[in-house]
Length: 324
Image (cartoon, rainbow, N blue to C red):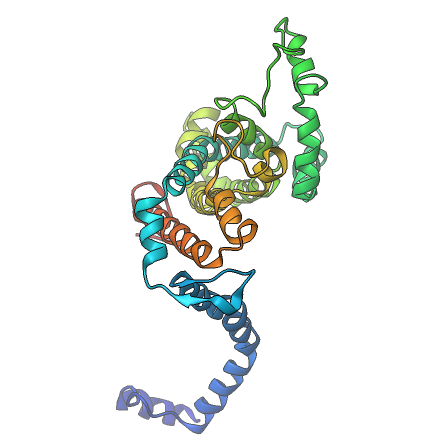
C-alpha cells in the first residue's frame, strides 16, 4: 500500500464491521493457530471439568457406585445451605484464619523486602536466597518438619522460649498443635516460613520506584520514614494488592498443612475443620462426589465475592502511576 492509498483509506473512514480483507483473515487464522494450544488446554482442563462438576452437583453421584447416579436437582445445594452446619463452620474457620494470617503475612513480606532493599545491608544476596529457599521445600516435607519443630516436648520453638525464663517444655508446656486458641497463629507462623515469593515480588516493586523521587524528597528534608510512608508504600500498592488477592484466594483453599499435621477430624475441638478439609472428606473420603461438587461451587462463589469486593476497593488505596 502506497502513502497515497493510505491517505485515501483514512479519509474513507473505518471499514464496515464484518468485512475482512484476505490479509486480515490470514493473520486471524495465524493468531488462532498460535493460541490454540492454550484454548484447547483451557477447554480440557478448566471449562469442561467446571461444567461437569456443576452437573455432578445436581446429582446423587457416589464414586464407589457410579452406575447408581441419579438426578436430584437442587437437593445437594439445599442440604449444603440449610441443613449442614459443618459447611458454615468450615467457612468460618477458614475466614477467621484468613483474617489473622493474611495481614501478618502481607506485612511480614513487605517489611522484609524493605530491609532487603536497604543499600546498607551486608550480604543482601545471601539473605534473599535464605528467605526464598523455604518456598522451594515441598509442602508435605515442610509440614512434617514443623510438626517436630513445634513439638511440645522436644521442639526447638519451646526450647527457645525457655531461654527467656518461660516454661514451655513438659506436660504444662505450650502445645501449639493441640490448643484451639493457638491453632490460627500456629499455622500463620508456619506460613510465614514460606513467603519467599511475596518477598521477592515486593522487592521488585520497591526497586522499580524511580530513585529521582527519593532524591527529590531527601533534598526537601524528608527523612527515611517520611519517604517510606509517602513514596515507597504508595508506589508499591499495586504489588501489595496483587499479593492480597492471591493470598486471599490461596487461604480459602487452605488444606495441606492442617491435613498433614492434624488430620481430617477437626482436632482440636474443630479448630482445624477448614472448608477444604470438609470438602475432601465428603468428595474423596466418603466418595460423595455430588455433594462435594456442590461444596466446590460454594467455595468458588465465596471466593468470587471476596475478589469482587477487593477489586471494588482498590480505587481508594491503590496508586497506579499511569492512571489519572
